[in-house]
Image (cartoon, rainbow, N blue to C red; front, side):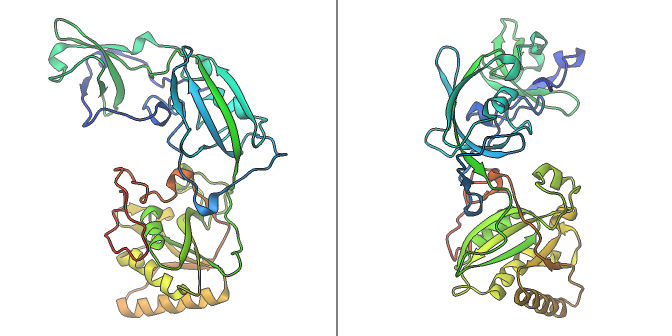
Length: 381
């Protein structure tokens, strides 16, 4: 079993340089992704509102097993009754069981649960953040401590290009600083109240509802592409995911390694009485831009997962895509490398990717998805 601490304190760490972050780290402990190993983060920031294609299924007879994508409401308490995190008032936590996206005890607790079931479990430290490690109490000489350091501050320190979060435990009279690099919940016994909301669908529907049509496009990083289509009048819903690869249930990390054959794509549900497929193609080409002639590249992003593509759901879409591509080639005087293929199974991306820029992106600065909006799209927020 992976341990929460993925490194050992050596002679170099005692004298490691450290700095104050630009702002003190805040937010739920569940959403704090520590740099101490994949299992150090108790629950990652995946509590996001569902996209229209990622609604959960409340199957009352199905019991949770490893590999199931599920949605859970929870409340976490310390032994003294203090609530340290909860999903109350917000979306349910979304994760896949058995993929180390939550600590081991949480993973084990949901096994066998059915939709609507509620249970309370106690998780010991060895199945949560592990015990406290005294080797992670680091003393830094006064001459290496930044000005203004105070007890209780959150800082970053490291050596050799690696950075680790830590809490200032004490500032000695001589100016030296004692840092505690243990995860905040190390050594703690945790109690959770869990409610299984249901099972999240991973595969997007292959057929559209009556009166609607499907379209699937790729034009590089799917965050900005999705927002562009969200703004189009007549687009009823969007979902980002992984298209045109042979592997089933690919993860974002696998797709980013280029090992699955998928491309980052956007599935669009639209009303053809309001917007035509040809008009959607215009939006696609605007997003592809000059990269229409560069294979496996979108801006500074390179790799097969960033190739552009039109994945048709009908012969009419195929013909329209081919005609549109030919016209663009004539205009540019160059070969357009955007692929045109029949739409393969579309695997819905992790919940935190859905409507990413509308929800704030990396910089927590939401961008408008209002129909007809022409604001410049900031690709990362």
